[in-house]
Amino acid sequence: MQFTTQLTEGKLIKRYKRFLADVELTDGTVVTAHCTNSGSMKTCIEEGAPVYLTPVNDPKRKTKFTWEMIFINGGWVGINTSIPNLLAYEAIRDGKLDKLKGYTTVRREVKFEDSRFDIYAENDNEKCFVEVKNVTMKQGDYAVFPDAVTTRGRKHLETLIKVKQIGMRAVMLYVIQRSDVNIFAPAKDIDPNYAESLAMAYKAGVEIIPVQAEVSPLKIEIVRELPFDLN
Image (cartoon, rainbow, N blue to C red; front, side, top):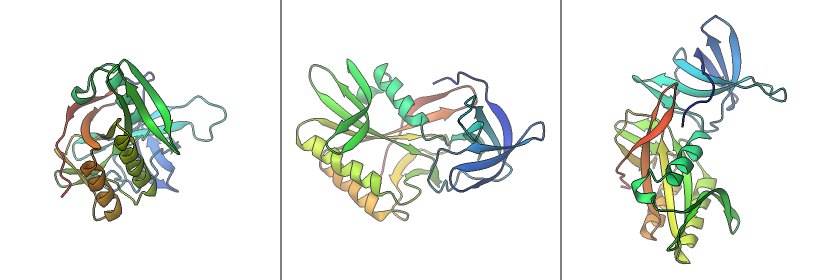
């Protein structure tokens, strides 16, 4: 995914009220940017760190910028939670994910029972629902999810089990928007219930596919699949 507009450079002053961040631009101007990430953003907040914003030309928006990424631990971390869904959709549509190749129909935001999954894909042989999660939290060499308790995430896992039970393919796809990690795991210390639900879903046949994205001010692209550890 390439950015269609040139990003605006600055440095983070502070993030507050979950959805807002004050940023000082290179010319000294201070702006307030929209933060799409409603989680705690642990390990990807550092005041004074370089950031990039997307300028938004929408008279209805109170904030004229969207916060895209922050430079931490020698690399860019993508914090825009809307990006992984687009990355996953494009990669599956274009056959760029080895484990999700060969689908002739790929759609976004498709309902199943009382849930809405990020991606639905099918071909002549199978139907597949994919739920996508954005991962930015780091613990040592691990990328972990979630960074805050998520009852909605547990519901998605429970519904993916139902998808599998009726004979369709069910996939949990974790898009890791940072390059300084090499393995994925559930954050048991933050949400042990989610970790338990993920283990149950995996045992029931739900596939777990963690992929790592390379983040830069020009583009964000999925570059490799990572192993995972549920224990």
